Image 1 (tube, rainbow, N blue to C red):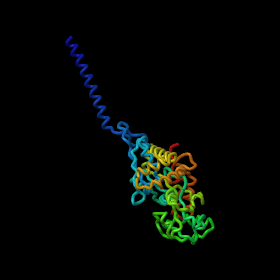
Image 2: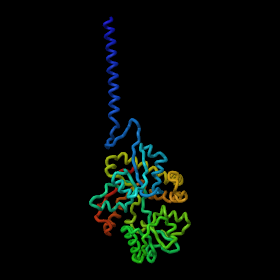
Image 3: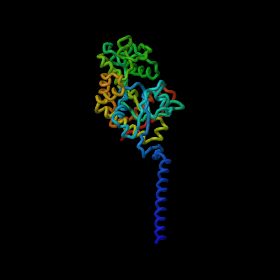
Image 4: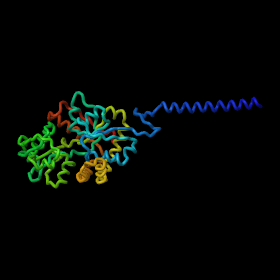
Length: 350
């Protein structure tokens, strides 16, 4: 009996020891294995619930073009997507260059300003992945008393120019298409920072983004005329602004890019439905902004973020290509940009 009892105790001891060793081995393997790898090749820490960090760099100081980002952050849309998003202030150089160099995964840019990179032998590795506003809302503003209510009437009046070839070609097109003489427009080199003040000096007309500077003139009580570029040709209804992504990053992190854009979509759609609350969120995040201007701008943009389309962020291939074709025809870019270059709707929510 003693021998049998000894055998039983020995067997129990061996089973316990082997089980303990196996458990310890699995724990050690789990520690050394690290985060699991997703099907698109990116790391994802599924055990700890750690959020994935991504960065988006703004094109300019925070304004209502960016509201959806701040709403997504404040309302927890990024958190719900498992993302920790850093909204970076614009660098001294180009936000596009920073994204292309990998200094940020995403950024804000414009179809016109990124045109030269797609028309070069060494294009910058960036792609537009969403349109923040569905149509080009920039144009020429002037005081109503000057009577510049059509493009041809810019002739004989001063215009503040930053001497960009694309800028001047657009002004020339709308003036001449309307029967006016572009050479009679008085070009004054001037980078206007305060439109309300500038319009009350010797500058008669200024290129503005209506959601911002147009709203500023309304808040100031100025009566103005506004010539919206998109009204003077499909080729001028380009996308401004857009969200761009670093090519290598979005190719290797497709699911993260989709989650990021879906959270951003929720931010902008919330701003569409709740413009005043969205304005309050932006002002709280950036207290130096003028609440009156932000509220008015947000109300106006609520109807512009999606306009007539159902899918926020959608880029119409025909409109995108038409603008680049016009640039090439007018020798404003070095090389022809093949149709479909520089954008994708792949990452948008269906």
